[in-house]
Amino acid sequence: MHESVKRETLYAEFIIEASKCFADAWSHHAESPGVVAHLYSVVQRMRLTSSDEVISVGEKVIHLVIEAYAASDKTFDELRERVAATENQYDPLREFSEVCRVELLALLR
Image (cartoon, rainbow, N blue to C red; front, side, top):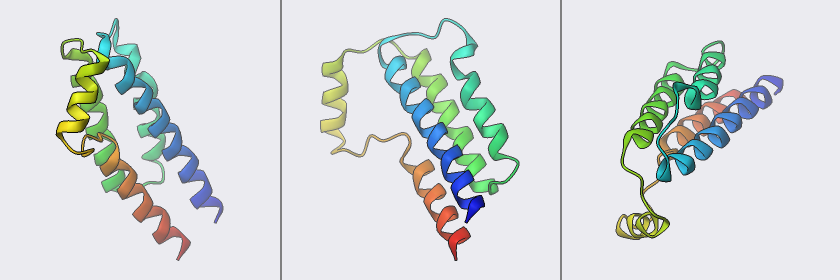
């Protein structure tokens, strides 16, 4: 139970930080690689206890964040249009959240 709570806290930290990065990247270019430093540190901490699948998907999220920062700046209306066009399937953190949920449920069994 303790291990499950520990991992859930770590996964939540990653999700919160990645969400902030995606929101910031939508209308800003990164000024330095430091914008993803916290994400890298959380993934490294996950390496201590998490499955290879969680680590792999976490790394994929980091790559998506880097690509988002490298892309041209967009307006809020463009975000709204993208979400509407993909029928709410635009969720760069969904796969990460899903593999984490599976892992946490397995720990509780």
